[in-house]
Image (cartoon, rainbow, N blue to C red; front, side, top):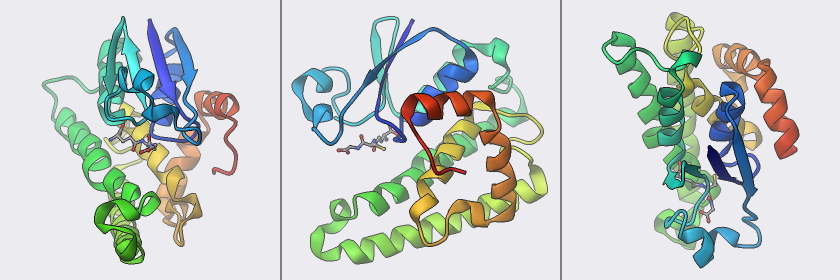
Amino acid sequence: MYELYYAPGSASLAVHWLLIELGVEHRLHRVNLAAGEHKTDHYRAINPAGVVPALVINGQAVSESAALVLALADRHPQAGLAPDLDSLERATYYQWAFFCANTLQPAFRNWFYPQEAAGVECQDHTKEQARLKIEAAFAQVNAHLDSRGPYLCGDQLRAVDFSFAMLTRWSRGMPKPAREWPAIKAYTDRLCALPSFAQVCAREELTGWP
Ligand SMILES: N[C@@H](CCC(=O)N[C@@H](CS)C(=O)NCC(=O)O)C(=O)O
């Protein structure tokens, strides 16, 4: 049994979407970020970092969106969303999981919370650097999908695609949203056509993407 602590459209989206795609039983707890619920002692007992998501797996709380996506795919191998451990594709799979978690997501953090990195006085500069980093990352993925797609790991949809698709959605209000890169546009069209995407959008009341 899973319990997901989430906020609509946030880093919990990939996990929520994947839970639906996998068809596994789960209970949802909506965390009101505007009201600061994620900074309460109650929530910090679940995720000490005070951010969403957190996933309680059989009573044990785990966090970090990308890790949760990988863990879910491994726990439900019948869905075929994780490449075999000894396959070459597994290395590519890790590559994109860490790319999402280590390259793209921190850049988005700087875009959405530009005061964090170097203070309010530097926030415009931080945001501009974040934009450049995000656009460079999208250009890299676009070229990769063009030559080695249609999914991040090749022919098959994998769990990391849920993480990356979530991150492309975060760019929708940016000067150059991810869907302006043609291969990423085709990719997000494919991901967003999954019935599980319509379901997660309905549950989280998300609109405007794609
Ligand atoms: N590395 C974490 C980052 C999570 C994160 O930054 N979540 C954001 C929402 S997208 C959040 O909770 N923000 C509220 C805050 O930082 O106060 C993960 O991937 O789970």
